[in-house]
Length: 324
Ligand code: NCD
Image (cartoon, rainbow, N blue to C red; front, side, top):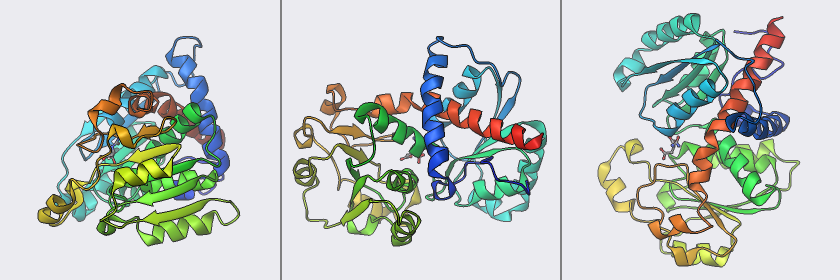
């Protein structure tokens, strides 16, 4: 652990990242697109080893971290294991695992079903730690790639009307994204079933952190309201859909009751609206939207590579500068 952590060495939560750090990462991601397209050569992190620790299923996040590191000419060691909640609760096991992998690698990426694991890892590890999703808490790298995609497609974030729709209670991507969008003065509408509302402590915290910004946050959670009608009438610049997080429900019947509540059809999308989704999607998006200019979710997933390259680059640079 570093006593002099004046620079950002870890990315654990959008709650503790500064606006300047976000802007710097988004800026570096543009450069990283050129590295991916072989327009620029960049091998500053040659032979640096990233430990990719996934204790929960993942396709995009795990692979895109791996590929991001490979595109930076670094190396990757993958550790994917189904860690049962009971063994997580023992605590000691994870502490030892982190300590050992930290001694093998130069940077750690960690995904866990339990909120707070990444933060704990960052307190144990000497090397930079990146949170790749911790329970229903945070998923900061997803928020950064979401913001990069919005900026790329809409040329700005400030002043945009953005709707976050679906499971806002358990969806960690929307928790992180709300912090990020609020930093850049977006107008945010939260649309969800009543039981899956954005936790009020997050809304309060976001408002508190951004009290000097002009962000507006509005909530709609009436289950009888037609989500397609709301989407159509809202004329949003961006609609961001999320999957109902089945694995986080204690009672599966509750999930069954709610699972079909939010589905967006092609007719609900205005001409200039972009449709985003962190994926995997179940049935939230009518497949007819896939081939329209409104669909941004494949581009969004693709942007995961340059944005994660930028995050790795920024954290390693800060870490080695401070170490000197
Ligand atoms: C998300 C996640 O893991 O939180 N997926 C991802 O990383 N792209 C969203 C989800 O699982 O619904």
